[in-house]
Length: 200
Image (cartoon, rainbow, N blue to C red; front, side, top):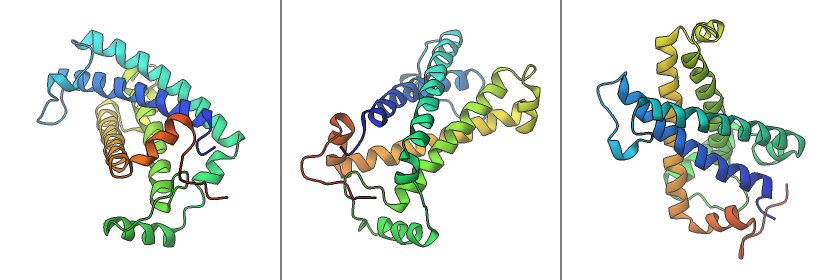
């Protein structure tokens, strides 16, 4: 088994929840942009500000619940320890160099140093986007949290930056799936026809 059921379920629930959060979040952003641009209507969800907020918070609770279950599974099963750590600077630099030259080998079920680093970073972005989102949602009731982000206005900027980081990860992730399509099937059925998992 390359990807256990718990990992696959968390992946696809997260993909759905994050898509809803991003598209509804872009509708919310368009109502009061912080940068001199807006997202086109076809990239948004909710139709209007109230509808977008409803979608955003429904997806947020799904994302948080899924994230907590994945976190508990990752710690209890040793998944994080086996798959994401250790991340050594020498291996990261080596694999990053190979990736830039398009010579980074990929074996289904085995994460190279660049992948391990990227997954850890995007998980941290997930924590940051939820925490900053809560600070924006309840800046009075959660004044201490908003204060950690430098106030409401700066929390919005942090929220946007964390979102941009997640979108960047998703874009690279989808590009790699297109370049190495054999990685998709194992994330659906858990197994690969031609590749074997490297023992850890």
